[in-house]
Structure formats: structure tokens, C-alpha cells
Length: 395
Image 1 (cartoon, rainbow, N blue to C red):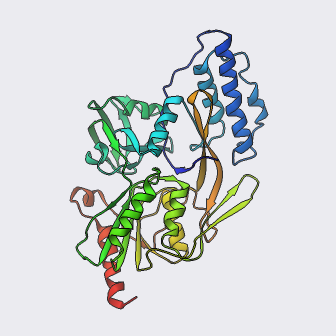
Image 2: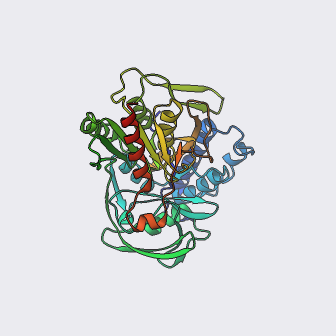
Image 3: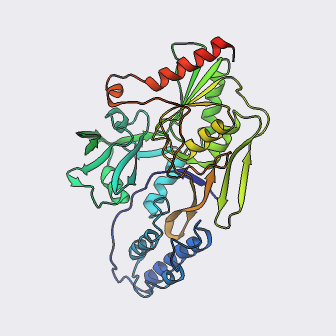
């Protein structure tokens, strides 16, 4: 079946279109690739109404009009756009390769994850320690210009293509943050995708584990190492803020680390079949637990936080999460291309559909621009206060 994805970002496309009349062989290849993409959506897409349209009419819509693979890429993109699903995406060979590198813990760029919200190009998250993070970009920043090019009307793919570039070169982003207009000049670099981080807190009894992403296959090993470091702590904080998601299996396995019983998540496919993922006895940490979430906590982060909240295993502190309750499957196509297709939706253990709604924290604590500029973290402070009180009460 391949990987199941839970993340709210776009990978770029090269934006080339137009036929070049390169012969029957390329025309045949283009037609085959288009038909292959059509068939994958026909067989697996979560909405059997295909956004209320006759999917069959797309199959031969471009017959005898595709002259080479570039034409097929444009036609497939047009077909996919008709689904009106920002998470079902066609990936050109280069973009498919980049996604694979992300799963393999290798990525190149500025370390920014972007999405389109209300026709505005929004920063979903930054990866810890990357140029974007060091430049001070924040979730929910609106990117208005990229190197002087207005982003209005620009696709996520085009925006990502403009933001990326050779290592050592610069990209200038114009940002709207609330009522502020900012300009950030960021130096591109190799992004080292480490997913799990620990650091000491003022109270030595409380451990801290930050999960920056669920995308890497190496994440579970990193999590095992981190939990070994904090195993003797009396309480633990798991920080999911700015974590845009990743692999479904990572979210399920990590939730299982903290649960001895109860459901973790259920997924519902196009035929309304429901599959429930349950936890197993043998949790590796049973002491008091807080999970930090915010508007950048999406998808796999919401599976983990939803599972721990609904099973009353953790207290959630921070602000409302992003709200992405859909699951994508990676499909490899001919010519090195691929597709991420929404194949199901997921529900928290209590049966809650959080898509476009998010998860409300148990304790709401805002994080302001002033907090960021003064390096003050009221959400983490509140988590420490909460756990200290629990430890004092013997709970």
C-alpha cells in the first residue's frame, strides 16, 4: 500500500506547459501517464462523487492533445484541481523525489512549510534550526511577495519553486503578520531533518520532548532514544507546536507508547468502512503528561494529541490546532512522477471529525508576537506550572 501521509504542505511544480511534437512515442507515454493518474483517482479517491462531477468525462478529455510528458503534467494538474482538494496533489518527478528525500530525512531549502488558506499563501510551520526558523518566520504568517513577485493568484507549487534554490543563495519574502508588514531575506541551505529533540527544564523532575515533524522514517528510533533520556522523570511535556504532520504510522506508534488501552484513531474510507487502530498494553511512560499544541499542529500531530486527550492520558495546553482530518496515500506513477491522494478521513477515539475545526486545548494559553520577540514562552511556562502542581498534589 505504501506510505500514508498526514501533513498539510505542498511540493512544488516546475510550471512548464505546452506540447512540443516530439513524436508518437512521447505522445503514447503522455497518454499512458494521464490515464494512469485518472485510474488511481477513480479507484481510490475518498469522495466517490469526485466533487459532484462525472469522473468518466475526464478520461478522454485530452485525447490526441498531449504531445509529451510536460503536457500530461499540466492536464493531470487540471484534472486534479477539479476535485477542489488541496491535499490531493500530482507530483512531477522532481517533486516526487523531494518528497522521498523528506521521508528519508533529507531536504533542501529554507525549512518552511506552506499551504493555501482562503486564497492566501500561509506559513504552516518552520523546521527547527533552519534558515526560516532563524529568520523568525511564524505559523500563520501570510507571504505576500517572493523576491518581488506577488503571491496573489500564485499556486503553492509555484511559490515553493520560487522559494527554493541553490544552497547559499538568498530569497526575500514579504510577510504580513496581523497588521504588520515585514520583509525577510533568508539564505537557502541544506535542511537536516531531525524530528525529535530534548532539552533540560528548570525543574529537573520534568522532562521535555519536542516533535518537529512526523515525516521521517527514522523518527521512531529518535523517539526511542529521547524516551530513554527522560524515562526517570516524574512528568513529561511533549511539544507538538508547529508540527505539520507526516507519516500516519509514526503518529499511531508514538501514541501507543503512552497508552495501555483504548483506541488511538479510526479511519473511514469512501465506502464508509471504518478501521480502528487500538493501543496495546506496555506503555513506556505512565506518569503525568502535558501536550503543547498550536495552530501549526496538524494532521499526525492531531492524531497523537487527540488520542491522548480522548483517552484522558494527557492535558493539552496552548491554542487550537490546525484542523486536518484527512489521510493521503503516496502513489508512484510512471516516469518517476507520483500522486498524494486523499483516501480516507480520520476520527479521534471519541469519534470526532476535526477536519477544518482543529482540537481545542484543555487549557488555552496564547503565544503573542511580543512573546516571540522577547523569547518568552507562556505556553511552556504554563505546562511546567501545571505539572508542578500535579506532582505536589501526588496525582
